[in-house]
Image (cartoon, rainbow, N blue to C red):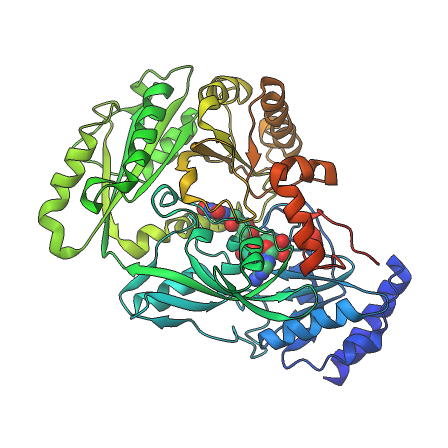
Length: 526
Ligand code: FAD
């Protein structure tokens, strides 16, 4: 511990010299946390980068908290400090643009996974507590969704709304929205939370919900980490299905594809047997991806040659849907799926079906991660762009972007699926387009250094800018999901009508603007 104190003093002194920070080293040393404040180079390195690999910022130190009180102590110290320093919670570091980084303060490593916290004996302070009677789970803010799932399944229960990938933290996704193919039905993850414990920017620990400290509750959900650090979330649960029928069908016509997707999400009010449980889709703009995509599905009944399908402007659209079921309903599942599929207008010979355990379906992206890791294709720059596109302009977006700007080339999946705005609580900080239905369009691309010009970071970043410019010029009022802006005016435009409330609540809950500065919305007041 003494060595750690020495290192910490050294690190702070170095910062004083290099960035002119004037924090008193004794202030941090006096914190007296039960966890560990570390300046170990491996901790600092992990906290300096994220999944995007597009930006880098070295924190002064990293806190592995042992409790919410540790977090409150650190934030209080930053808030009361004569000189001030910033504090950024880091969930699993799966942001793209340094949103969980800070170069003028301390990063709190919320998740025990991948960090040294667990090796040091600072696992997540509280394991998930499941209430079967109330159908909810109380989980630590740094818990990963995969671990939430594993805990709740022990009781035959599971959260209702998901992200496609489960190695993300609860606090991280709730700070954005948390969306996947269930969102049309249950809303995003932020619509499925009953209560939170939050450490505000003043270092107070507050419990909040619809009924208690409701302003803080709504501000924090989708709040990009600006109002407080989520240390506990009470997540709504449902009985966990046992199996999933997973179906993909193809379209060559965008209008048929969009019509069917919109029809399927309009069924959200139907009884469970008369709607799908998950509606997503993706765009196939190049032959290589068709083959890739094909290899993950096997359909002996339909040996279709996809390359023989005439694509509209060289682009195909794949609708992806699932139906959950229990083993006891195995006799009726075929019939339920058939009667739903009958109403759709996909290419008849293009039905690909598979059947798997519920957990395997939810954890599907992890399989892809392992494959990419084994080929050295995971830890590469990810210039991702996620947009919410209003339904009224999605056909223009298709024409201008999928069939235009992309020029039949991509470097990763392009997801597209619609959601119902009425499933989003407008009191939250999350921002959606001003229409009843909007689409997520996600360009999840990896930049490679393989000599292909169209796969370089520069090319893909330019293309992202071109897409945003196209929307601007065409008057398509998109909203960025997992937004990234560099000027406050851009943030004001992003939040639109919500900005004045967002600003007011920031001044109330984090008046020194020390939290989550990696979002680049506010400048700290020191
Ligand atoms: P971080 O990146 O660590 O943090 C994100 C922001 O939240 C930062 O500003 C941070 O300071 C703040 N923060 C973190 N923890 C807390 C906390 N406890 N309290 C308050 N603020 C906090 N998103 C979807 O919605 N749907 C998807 O299907 C989806 N799939 C993805 C797949 C992959 C492979 C990747 C890399 C990302 C995906 N995402 C998806 C995006 C993901 O939701 C965001 O990256 C989100 O930020 C969660 O990541 P994280 O937990 O690592 O948070």
